[in-house]
Image 1 (cartoon, helix red, strand yellow):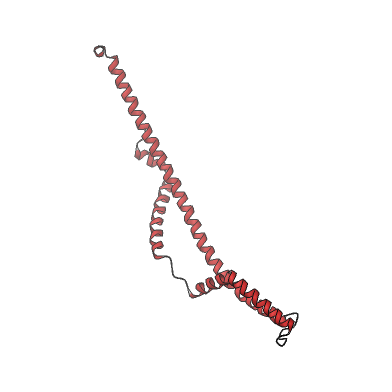
Image 2: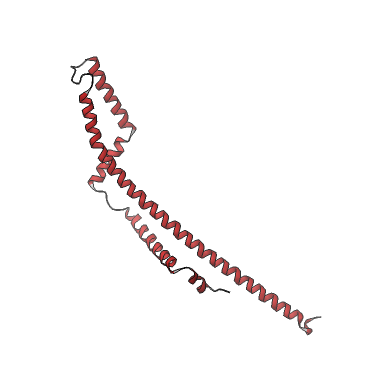
Length: 170
């Protein structure tokens, strides 16, 4: 029958080291979660604000209203035609807006991608740790079962021996 030390030796050294690292990482993550991470730089704050603003329905609605007004005022000539029909000035303004908005949005997405990658790595590490812990629990349960079977076998042998003794029968 195997005892607990021999079961612990069955878990490879690399698994034990990994469990130790994951436990330390968990403690470190808890401490970092309380600090809520490093502060955002000014550029990161700007990129997040621009991306959040340009990705909202409010921005789309306001942008659509401005475009419709621009086109209507130039077609109907209520005001002097400052940008006649092919709307080259409007095209220039929209191109300028897109040229500046794209890098801000990309910076925000890259930062969010880094955050998501870190979360995925943490989830992976937690899954590995859980798998190893479950394996250790299975081994402990198997050991308890084997110990119980051994005790029951010994009890049956003792009872059988007592019954087979000549003076034990009444």
